[in-house]
Length: 104
Image (cartoon, rainbow, N blue to C red):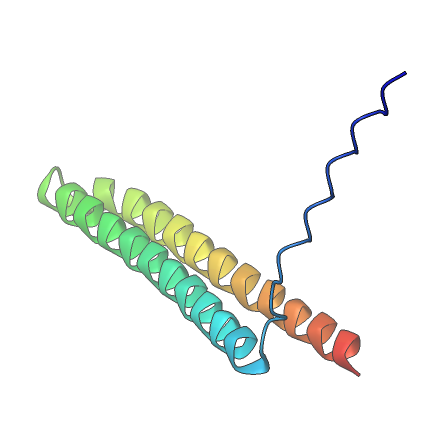
């Protein structure tokens, strides 16, 4: 009887270097900057939209008819900007706290 063929040797796992502290710090820095830029862009977009709509309402009709609409638009815009910005900084603060607790 013929001898069985030898089993193929297992391939060694590729060597993946552990992430360095400088690359981790750089990733965190880019992530924080990208998040801040996204929040700022959203805030600017909301503000610009509110200004455009206010100009449009102010140009149509009498001021007594446009005033409640303008107040409602400003109120909604300030609420949206405040909520989005507060959420970003709240999430960022919790992320930083979790990172500090994990590393200590």
